[in-house]
Length: 221
Image 1 (cartoon, one colour):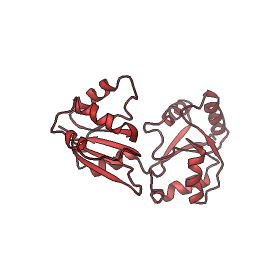
Image 2: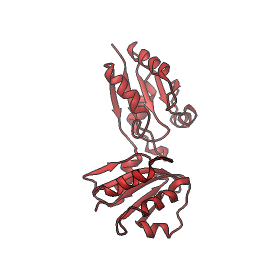
Image 3: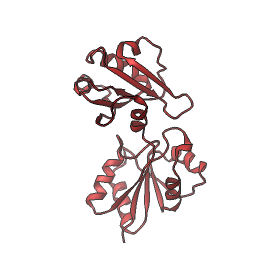
Image 4: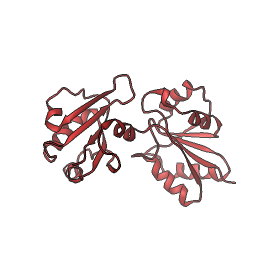
């Protein structure tokens, strides 16, 4: 019998957000596929998990994918984790999952933390319908990206890094209606968690700490 690939969500900052089922799964599988084995080691050490790890990230080649497929085909059970949050959500793990599903491998979710749902839950904006846009492009097509985001009439959510947050806000200011509100979560669940709220001009007028990871939520029209 082929093994199972478990998609295991890990904390986005606060280690206490790990679920009992996730810990139990990581202890029982034959191997853990990690975005960065050094980052995952901190989590595993915290929960006294000694399962062997294997790197799998955006630069992993076809040989690593075949190796993973072979392990599963031989009956080994594996878990896939990222540095933080749910694998496959704006993450290269979705390519692995797509490949293995086509090969008939069973993929099972172990749900938990995700920055996108955490930010939406505290935004106060309508969440019965929303569009998640991942990360904005670094260089090319940024204008097109933000014009498309501004044109969506329901709630929009996307990720941004600290060193580009002000560039992001300025890009939005050029296309977003002045009265449309935003909620920006910085370092959610971590020690210095901060949530900024207001219109684009109000946000540009305050001192946003440009360090850490950000989730930007734009209210529906």
